[in-house]
Amino acid sequence: MSVAFLLASKNAYFNYGLSLLANDDSDIKCYEYRDVDSAHEMLNKYKEAYLVCDRDDYFSYCFLMEKFPITCLCLEEVSYQHEKLRVFSNRRPSPVLVFNEFTEDERKIVYLYFFKRKKIREIAMLTQLKENTIYYKIRSIKLKLGAESTRKLPILLKNFFLAPNV
Image (cartoon, rainbow, N blue to C red):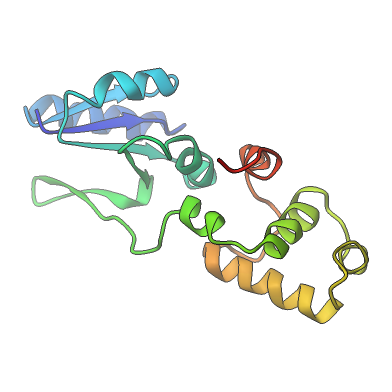
């Protein structure tokens, strides 16, 4: 067996369908994702490993699986065409890499704006930056992440900003 899928989606129909396809193909195996240990157990057995999750959970799982050689995919990146299972990985860099490349000011802005829900004026006072600079950096951060224009980011990312980088 060369490919394994960890199913972390909340879509039971997708999980069931992918499991049925895996039953028909000896090179593919599906596992239900329970915790990080379940991912660790299967790493030695397979050539490639993918964690399939919902779009809402993508950033969280990318950070969670950062230390493992597992590729995180959204549901939309897995397809069944011409009697073959296909994986379409996006060309964007991993959110983990993007966050690691943020400057100290960008990290502060992300934390204050997205998590503490501070206003631009308050952030400008705290960071000693101009309001226009804050607006520009927020737009730049969103573009780097490929995020929609929203204040919502997964709660799991709070740990990334609160814990020191090692």
